[in-house]
Length: 337
Image (cartoon, rainbow, N blue to C red; front, side):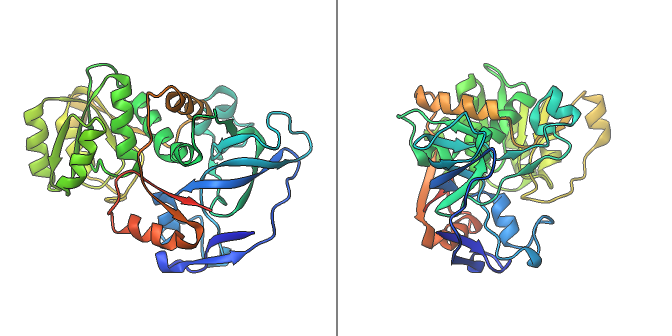
């Protein structure tokens, strides 16, 4: 089979198409013929050499978390799926034995990790991590859901977003940002989002963004959000200076969930503002398999349509990562082997 492997950790030009043996399922596994695999900043950080989990000794490395396709073969002991089933993979990898796996939620697992290997024509996965797809949910749509939409849904839960709440999403045009806006609307919440591109914001408004702010300067954004009103929850996938910005615009007892570091891995914050305002900063990673099942249900019911910016054949995986690196896209970029 063919795979888009990271042969060098140098960015998009480090992707090569390689031949690998078609995987055979082990006990509890299933081999999925991959029809779509979305890419994420997690993959791009690996490709740029900005991840501690992969170094040159691991090359060539096949990334890709968000797998959707059709089951080709199952291993011994598998009962939940069978060949021919259309599925999407929950990429969570958990130990199953720690306190958090026993008590939940599973994404608190002490040994939490993520699946890699979807940027290929076939992928060997844990069969019990597969979620069935209804006939009216396409593979490309399904592949968009696991990382971005699971993450956004869990963040919205962490900030306790509900009807009529105001949710602030800085950097709203990325995968998690777009998902956050769409899911906030599903929950009945209102959203404020920022971008450096007016054209991208126009597109987000068509997806349910209530208040669009063009710009990147935290002080200007602070003033614009303050004019709209006090924020109940912040979905912060940027980090850096945007953490204090989120604190500044939150109401007393407001809540901010942080899931990423696109704008910086460290933040300076005003500690008195934090404790005097009873504000909360909450870490958030991915979501749960039940979250993915719920997202599939929302798509099947017509309540959610994942935003796909563009699809790429396997041979153009490097170009997909170049588009992500150039920040030209709105929504998900999906490779279709």
